[in-house]
Length: 529
Image (cartoon, rainbow, N blue to C red; front, top):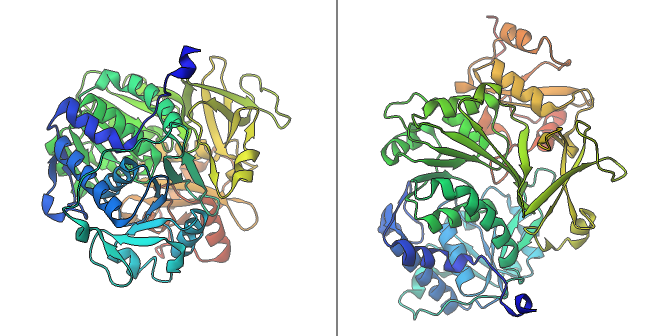
């Protein structure tokens, strides 16, 4: 009875910086690009300054007319001020809806329609490109972080308005909207609330306790819920931060060398790119105690390179498996000692007290160890619904179990192994993901390889090499000799592969472009070794 009378727990973005500043004061935050909302503030800030910026932006939004529970879409060029704007929207009790700048205008229009006339925060660049053909009536009002033409209101004109106390919605009311990767079409809008977000935050705080206070470097999507939970953990423990927008090794390497992070987290494709930093001058990764991976499993070759770059006594890579709808539902880690035996698709076990994982057959029966089936999870961190598509949400829930959309199996020790996305499965391969891992391990010159369906449902490897060097046909033949039959490889520039907002590769879109003859390929023919 007493528990029902007490307020429920909640993770509130609008209070995150304020609480961190009160607890840790002027811990430093380094940016690699000035903030668009405060270009004169520089790139060396502190918890206290950022908390004040959030409070100031919240006051400006209130002055512009934004009110509690209203949806506020944030769609602007990639930068850390997306985070500050999201926290400011949350601080006045409104609901930030984070839309990736990589979305095209047609998709943005669909999502704005599903948000039911939201406020829109954007910038001149967006209004003159992606949003140029947008029906302005889809938004209640358009606010900009810079000066922009048309019927817009610049947040700069709302300066010096009175500050307001923070507003906290009920823990089970919507508080954040993010979208999925969009790998299979129009991305769905995932609705989070403080209670479900708290149930994701707490286990991640427990996992992060061992590295509390270590300097951290992050290159993550600012529109993904994972960034906010990781930021919540790091702010709670008072970590100095390096927040990167540009992952190019030539740009990020010197900053990492100067910052010397003990914690690093980025996307798996960026980790592959950062293999080049393992032996770079200044030892950019030499002080890393823990790498974090949450979006895709990191390829084993990359794991070995990253762990080998650290000079710490016992560095490890921590793998969290989940999705936007659930948060992390399984975890595991790899040490330098075990890196030679690492299997990239072993994603760990359920999080005790917070998540349970099972693998089921086509009739919903639990599969025995080693048998492949659909992965399902039960977690208190599950989103409330899909905004505008509740029927799609309902189809993925079975008596509290959430269908992850992945195929895999559990071994006899209970560890979960990921094989493929259900939508991407290729019948002639046990696992296209494992085949890709094997090829990357055998051919160091590959930056990425993606196996997709060809026009006749045949498995076609789409490959990207480091520096776009021509693929060595003899090395490719030797590397694939003992694998199931693959079609001739198609070589592309990595930058030409269609990405999601979290830099995943859109496999189904690659297959569509390949079938239509529209996939940009390198004209250089394979060479003989």
